[in-house]
Image (cartoon, rainbow, N blue to C red):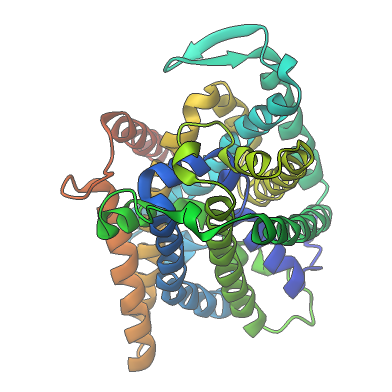
Length: 404
């Protein structure tokens, strides 16, 4: 019978959480973020999002010390709710992780095609008007199989790969920030918001759950902790990932908007790379950004792969570029729902007043993030296609549950 390796330490847990959180979205979807909110709106959206998630991170840090179970939210809700509630909590949280994997598999082909345009050949079919090319499909499938092999070999292989890619991403990011600081100008931030400040911030805040899902991955591999690892280290890893992750997104938006006029980047593929190319008049920063994005993609793909599945990733890969933006919307809702269930469960089992106050804040924040996607009164709520995708997932979960 196989046994757990039990090799993970604080740096490994941080790399897993941060890497699961930060992929290539800051490059692939930067134009969408700026179009939603403008530079200051997007910056404040991610900054407020990071602060608002701290109570939720605290709850997860407490849960993992009490119940170090790989089932995560499903195990937490099982302490106070009927099995059906626990099942669907886990099912929805699986969606939040699962859909990241095909997203990253699609994104790697999109990034590689920017460097090697010949990959945009041999069109197979179209999904929602977006072409699916054979070379990009093969590349994404190859990366999926590679990460499946890495994770099959065990958590130590996966953690080593994660540490290496995370370190590379952070190192290159510091270099990117220094370039922006030296070549940019404050005037490029004008206008600060896309619409009104409130709506601009809200539209970014809605997608924060998707792009910052990952800090709660720490409890799901808690059983792989090194024998000498102290339980308080789980909470430290979660907080570090939230702070560094939110800071990464804030600084990424700021660096792009500072180095080039942001309105000229809307609708441009890989707006981050284009901004630096315009500012420097050279190709080498573009290649640096793409290399950094590829490492970021690898770390995010691998981090979610620890929690995701190979077959589903390969299936989602077939949807091509049409998958990218809708996935962020559905994934945000699914993550917020899982956070809400975890916080509510902790509030019900915890007796100390101070901890109930913190978990109550987590309940309020996660519920708000969930309602912002499903209630029509909020700008940027679910589209009909996103409701259909969510309904299909819930229906599939119901069929599997009944069949079981």
